[in-house]
Image (cartoon, rainbow, N blue to C red; front, side):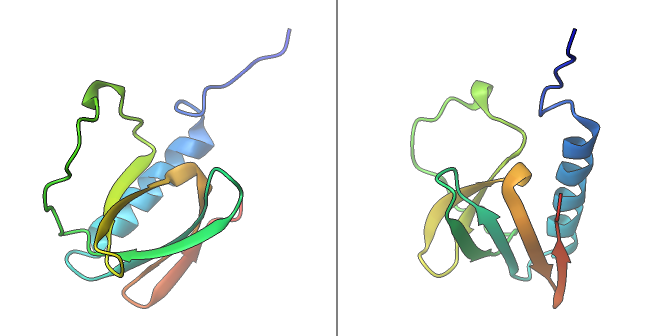
Length: 102
């Protein structure tokens, strides 16, 4: 019988998530740049300030929030965006780029 691991409980995913959280937290109020793969396979780069906590407008159901999804305000567009920790390619914090190659 084949064993199936949930992406939420997979140790590698959990380590990646914690590393991304730690990097973002270390930025304080300095800008963070993240590159990731969107669901459609295209790549996106966005820059955000982790200390930006302006209100998110909408009626999303917070009981169904995936812990791997980060909601941030894109500095260049001044609009809320989200990215999935499982799809992050790299994060640049305080001039240091961390790549995720798994």
